[in-house]
Length: 113
Image 1 (cartoon, rainbow, N blue to C red):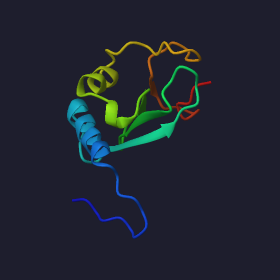
Image 2: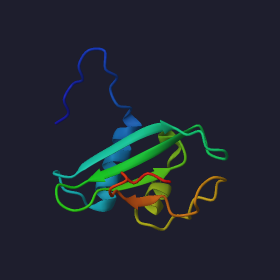
Image 3: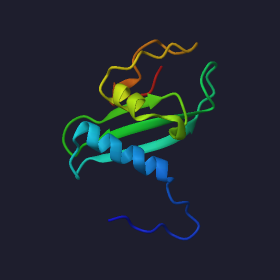
């Protein structure tokens, strides 16, 4: 059941809801696991102006985060599957450390250094 937002608060885009459902299905998540998908501005050279961040926060176990360097509207099911299941190529844009964009969130919040 989805709750209605308070007046003046934007409702999430249908595409973000589709991605949320796809993440749940691909990873086989239960209802107690939170999935958060946000689009953030990205100022790194070689990256598009917006990137999509997917966070999975289980009640028990470690949270995980993936960064896809494109707006949510441009993410295909194949790209999402590759990123979540670890089959995607590492980020090769200038300024990226070259590691896969999935990281378990630990004491540093999963941020790149």
